[in-house]
Length: 104
Image (cartoon, rainbow, N blue to C red):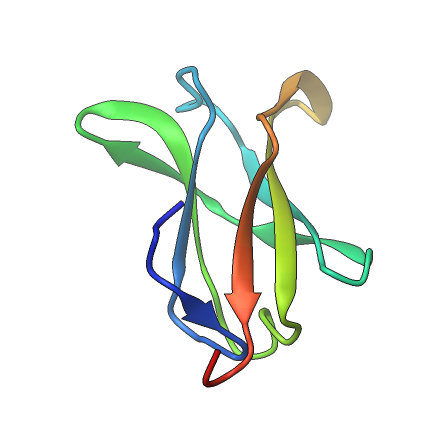
């Protein structure tokens, strides 16, 4: 992730995860998030093409996403569903970033 500091309650932060493979056929793209306090949830993301490679997922933070200071751990989750059946699913490598309190 970026070396720029990001702060509690920041809205509009783009979180981009590289899945390491072509995920253009994914029908589900999520970022699984482990908050600093250990709570886990999912953010619905979008498959994103960067430099001609559809290997990425993108999520833009909204209000109440980054409500805690500390280290957030994130992991890409993608799957393809056809006819109600999961055809494939994959997890990306875990990444992390730090959210700071104001004036830190």
